Image (cartoon, rainbow over all chains, first blue to last red; front, side):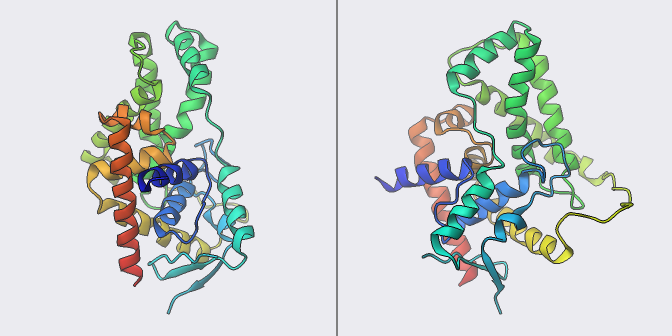
Length: 66
Length: 221
């Protein structure tokens, strides 16, 4: 697979709501943005749009850097 | 196991390896509806153009969430809310409905037609000063089941970081990534919106991702 094909596959995966490699900062940022654009009740686009990044983030332990 | 580092002062650490990774995927994927097959969408569009009300409703039901996400990603929040972006998304849907009787299938995906309109509407909104008028929510009567203040702040910081880095990309690269990821368009559909061949889209999106990755890593170094 060429690097271009890998990027294509990564973007396809992100668009499906998958995060193949949380260690990839670009993928992480795009996933966070996508999540934020989703409504709290799902993808109905009718709510206040707060999203619930925190719910999927809760499966990842977070520590603030110092 | 990999460790992602976000340079907003927040460092996500995957502590449970593939289990956590899978959960993240499930979390997002469970909130994204699967897209209708292209051939089904083409048939739906054909019926909608002929005025079939059920087909029009189904078509809008399919496309509206994608348009809402796109407008939200492009326009962002104002005073913590997506009111402006959602209003623009509504305008896009109305414009699509108005243009539907005149739509002719020229072999391009219908989504390209929709996002061509969406792109112009968003550009209009960015130029206008409408962003200054923001409705405010009433004070809630009961307890708020939403995320707490700390979690909300963390979320805002991270998403604003994403927006800030995306804003530093060339316009075409930023638009490309948003259409591919947030709107969920294929490389072919994205190429149709931006006037590029699918091959050119794949090369440009690879460069955009590399640039975004580099900027994120530089900030976290």
